[in-house]
Amino acid sequence: MTFIERLSLYMQLTRLNRPIGILLLLWPTLWGIWIAGGGTPAWHIVLIFTLGTLLMRSAGCAINDYADRDIDRHVERTQNRPVTSGRITPREALWLAATLAVISFLLILPLNTLTLLLSVPAVFLAGSYPFTKRFLAIPQAYLGIAFGFGIPMSFAAQLNAVPPVAWILLSANMFWSIAYDTEYAMVDRDDDIHLGIHSSALFFGKYDVTAVMGCYAATLALLAWAGKIAHLGGLYYAGLAIASAIALYHYSLIKNRNREACFKAFLHNNWFGAAVFAGIALDYTT
Image (cartoon, rainbow, N blue to C red; front, top):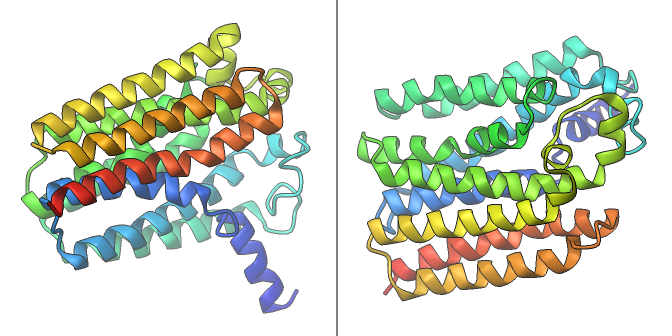
């Protein structure tokens, strides 16, 4: 196998060819960075956390494919992934994940002790999430905490403290993650039933659409609360209004539970996160 061919497999393993996961992880981190920095975060913090997001999401994907290597071969959408198809060995996937995690840790070494301490649970959450679908009824809630842990870390990096607003933002991200990952799980519902895997789509059952919209509502309510604590103004709430409209658009996509439409709604969550961030960033410019 040539170097280019192996590099292509690594890109598939870490999903660098599918950046939606990076964006869903990056937006909440940027929410935290901008609010913690009062609208003017240090640019080295922005760079460190952006690169760290990219690296840790990639490491998480490698661990996920290692954990699911015996499951993915039974699902048409995932049976050609590099590990389950045998083109990359499980040990190689673990080494790649470990290497990416170490590089991510090296990035935050110049930051304060509190940020370094918070990196420990962050790595644990990212590494353990792929295994939670075996025993947690709603693993998407765990995903939301793992995906949002950049929020308290971003506050720690800039304030050397984690105020209540950071945990409110993390809670908002948890509900958002349940919303968008339930949309994703609605695509794989039949496969998950067959393989005995837990997912929020199976847990909510016939109330899945209602649950998704309820989670969007909880997300927006928590974000509004965070905005009040952070003394954000009209432009921020305009961003939340746009995010609300996006959530209603997602309802139009998922209400009939069509697989392709549910997957489209999942991908479209990038714009939900972007709308919230735009509201934060613009509000601080006035």
